[in-house]
Amino acid sequence: MPPENPTDIDQEAAVPERAFVLGLDGVPWNLVEKWADEGHLPNFARLIEEGASGVLESTKPAHTALAWPSISTGVWPDDHGLYGFQDLNSDYTHEMNVSDNVQRPRLWDHLEPSVVANVPMTYPASDIDGEMVTGMMTPRLDDGFTSPTSLGDEIAAEIPDYEIGLDWGEYADREGQFVADLESLVDNRTALLEKLQDREDWRLFFFVFTAPDRLQHLIWDEEVLLEWYQVFDDVIGDVMEYAAELDAVLNVVSDHGFGPNETIVSAAALLEREGYLERHASSGVRGMLAELGIDKENVLSKLDSVGVTEQMIVDYVPQAFVNVAALQVPGEHSLFDVDHENTVAFTHGAGNLYVNDSARFDAGIVDPEDVPDIKMELRDLFEGLTDPETGEEVFSVFDGDAIFPRDERSPDLVIRGEGEYEVLTMLTDEVFVDATNKAAGHHEDGVYFAWGPSVEPGAETRDATVVDVVPTLLHALGEPVPEYVDGRVLEEIFDADSAAATRSVETAAATVEHESTDDGTDDDEDMDEVEDRLRGLGYIE
Image 1 (cartoon, helix red, strand yellow):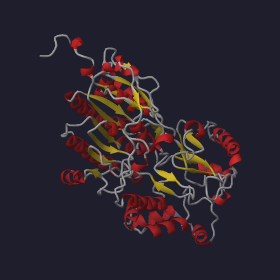
Image 2 (image 1 turned 180 degrees about the horizontal axis):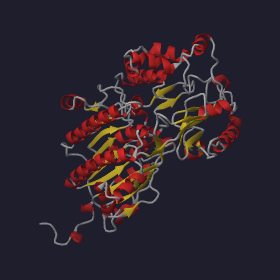
Image 3 (image 1 turned 45 degrees about the horizontal axis):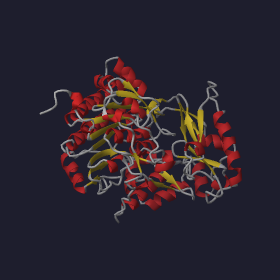
Image 4 (image 1 turned 90 degrees about the vertical axis):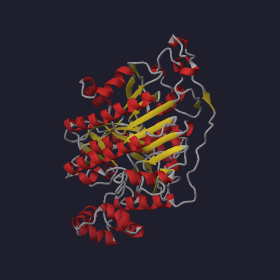
């Protein structure tokens, strides 16, 4: 029989055994807090009232490829190794980052069995104890899409229209079609969530919806956004009910926040204007095409007008042809259009800046001893840039050695757009460009909610960051926190009488090592091929 007084329960017996992490990509704290307070989001409001909540600070830059690995590993990018979707090489080429590039174990490696689905940067699927469905950057629904592979067959049969995501950029003039396609995407993602919930023998359930990010890049209209946030509020209500049935601790998190864009500012164009970057000379075939007004944008436009879409080129055009075309057809690529033999500094990824160090890059022209002085010059340049129309400061700049001290491969500087300015690394002709096709961009303030066993109702987090999720959940479930973890246990979220609050945080040497997913298949070659095509088209920078 159960004890008459709940306080008689042994504290160790009260330790929850399960954790559910629901990810909502790109959800900002300010919108959720406002709409929950106004009564529009009842389940978000329940998370605030019945659980713990607060801002979750993202990585620098606040970017999907950095932040989700930090959420799932508990370490910053200079330990897990990812600074963007692609990894920059010494010869100025770049390779697609895949799951194996994450250099620390993920939360699902510590809590087994696990159910993991649609988490960005997880392709190809790891052979975990449980089930995995990969997320953003999955090139196709092939053998690397799920683990076990039979799960992919089940999804194809039961959810035949399942998609990884939507390229919001293709819908710039078709918002109505975008909304219809987004509804289908979310419906199918929810169907996957419900399918995976049939499995109940898990310790960790980690599921991500990326639709908020896709939506907000294209549409920043609060009436439209609220309608969609109410859809996700319903999802949260269902997940809360499911988590309660299994006595699981629930965390709802976003990898970064969001805010409106008014102006796009090209960091590469600024470098060119100030003499730090040299563009490839328009000679030979490239020069002739430039004189005729033929560039990447109008080539793709002409092909699209006859039914040849950019995605079709990605899927079917031979890699070698795409690479040759990309080198010859003028465009705005931050690597292909730069003459690195005459360039002091260049950009790559989401706000990362590199000094062209001769000890680091094959065609580097900056002596390593001069790198600190060049960094100071560039920091002054970017921090001093103001909008010629408003006089507002445009950028904040962070020293790569300060925020990424453990990795010599890290960017030299990280540039962040302030307010309604967004940094662009593409090499455009003008420094300032109206944000006509990108309504909103990433900000640092995401969301954190904890609810369920051990959580103090109404608690507020203090300076929580994306690396705090792993240690907090491990501690909540009575597990030691690996010594290498950068984050802290958010002790302020726990009920004073809970085991998590009364037990000291236990640390331990790493008991789980990062394991390669390379099983002899061609997954890496497939990703290289897709990456090369995407790079050649400028599909991703």
